[in-house]
Amino acid sequence: MDRNQKAEVVSALNAHLAEVGVVVVTRNLGMTVAQSTQLRQKMREAGGTYKVTKNRLAKIALGGTDYAGISDLLTGPVGLASSADPVAAAKVAVEFAKTNDKLEIVGGAMGDVMLNAEGIKALASMPSLDELRAKIVGLLVAPATKLATVTQAPAAQLARVFNAYAEKNAA
Image 1 (spheres, helix red, strand yellow):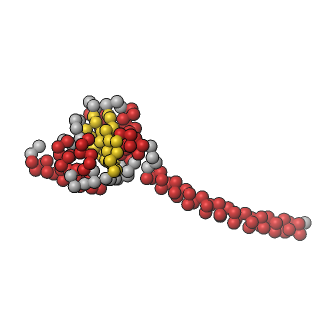
Image 2 (cartoon, one colour):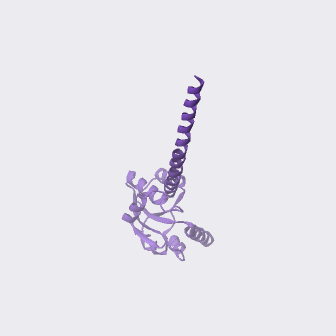
Image 3 (tube, helix red, strand yellow):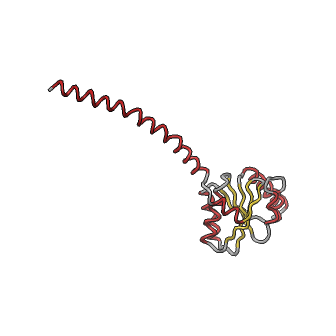
């Protein structure tokens, strides 16, 4: 990799880090290409990315971002999982680490807040942004549905009473 390519990698990674909501640092302990591809695919499905770059280039790219504090975690063979949703990347990384002993969660950050491995696992246990939106919509719709049911019931009872009188008079 020549100097121009390295500069492009650093600038692309820096721009990417400026847009994400969470970065999870993982240690790869001999993952195969198939396992790494599977992790990347799961990350993409969740709306995140998983990148393995040289630690030196990643440390340069972290400079000037909210994630500059995680540069101390970049030792040995590491990868960076990131996503705009603060929960998605952590959830995928932790789930993958449970089924694969060759991936270890080292730590990470959510904005300028540093997280250790336990913090990332706690973040992964939280509901995602889409799940929270669905719960809010459900909470907003439930009272309206109940209100419509309650206001409709007296009208239905009146209709039944009028129908009964009409049938009685017709008979």
